[in-house]
Length: 412
Image (tube, rainbow, N blue to C red; front, side, top):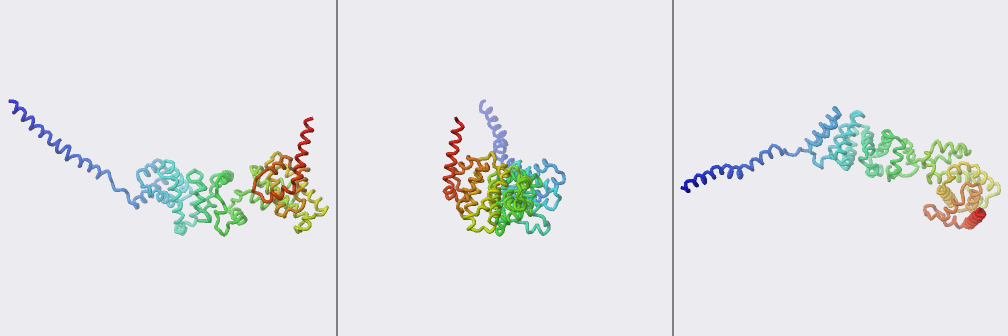
């Protein structure tokens, strides 16, 4: 009895089991996995398709200004990493011959692609360099291509996508000249002079290296920058060139002070470089007035008239010197270094440095602390310190003892 009962059960199991067992579990899964693979896994887009997609993306965005749609389109492109810089290149090149507004929107699109993490700042830099390489070809149709690229670069630097140091590094020795200067001009337009000055001071950009090799000297650099309206980035260089001229035109303290106020940012008034140039200009003017021929004999043994005139001229500049040196011991030290370098350049004529030290002290232009700080300072930056110390050592010793006696008198 049991056997027949069992048989149907046994025969039923394979019958029911056969579609599940054989077909369902063994034969069916591969097709189920394969079919979606056929429909979902499209072949990755070719380079040509990616280029067309990029063009459509940027054209649609410039028409609609819809950033979300543009970013979604970029995500859906699933562009491989090696295409990203070309994608950015395409966006820039596409907008080059369009309106300034469109170029600005293209910059905004690039900014958003970067901040969304769809492209990297390195991709942007590569894109930029590759557009630059195409410049000669593009210039035939768009003569102002470098100016337009300068706008892109300026916006990228302002948005912190690219650092000014990295950008400058790619353009050293006048590569694609004058693109770097055009970029600086654009930043002034988009921000202002002060913003660019601050950025530039904090950077490590060596401006001479940004020029073609033939122009890599101070005078030529200043000339080029003045031509581009960028000499404000080097106010001290301009000062060095102009101040002595100004003093010769009108040596009255009022007009010198007014000229400095009108031409040199107040921020620089406490800069050591500024003080150095100020004092050097005064010393050069005095030297020229008392000994126009730079006669060595007169330098070594000046007449009484020359010594009186030297003192008189120094006294006439006293209000300007006091204005900038008063209360700043470190700037007084800079002033003494300017004097040291001046005497060194003249070959340390006998008694000259000592004379100036005594006059600067008597006229209360430089305080005791300024002289003693200069003596103790170990900076190697300025030539002639050893010789200078030798010439004024006794005087400095006298100054120290006079100081001590004075403070003892005050104690009583």
